[in-house]
Figure 1 (tube, rainbow, N blue to C red):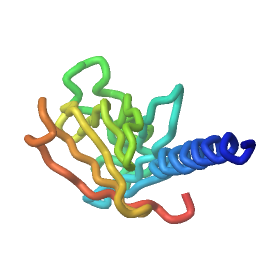
Figure 2 (cartoon, rainbow, N blue to C red):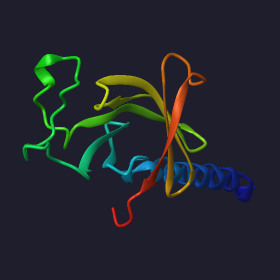
Figure 3 (spheres, helix red, strand yellow):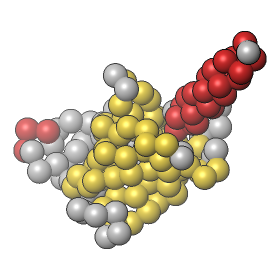
Length: 147
């Protein structure tokens, strides 16, 4: 009788542990598809966010740090691109997928709805879209080893 009570408990805890491990797969540092930036993804208050932590070309032609010159908010245009949060508000939805967030493209000054998924531990599919996921673009980011 005790075994019948214990077995479902073990199955549920095993499922929760594997789901927790899968949910944390996204954490770490990723190289964008253009290979121009590293984005560090972390979890804060049960939400996933990511910021630029490395740039291939961190300075402009005059040697000054790149700034967010295309930001639609004029007050933010002098903020450095390095350290800029480009992923915000994601939650884990199961099956190695994160939804409900946005991705900011500093080179365009645009924010897009976004979802992300992992089918390989070292490849992150980042899909930006307007309105519905069907109308958008997917980029594949690569995990930065050692981060």
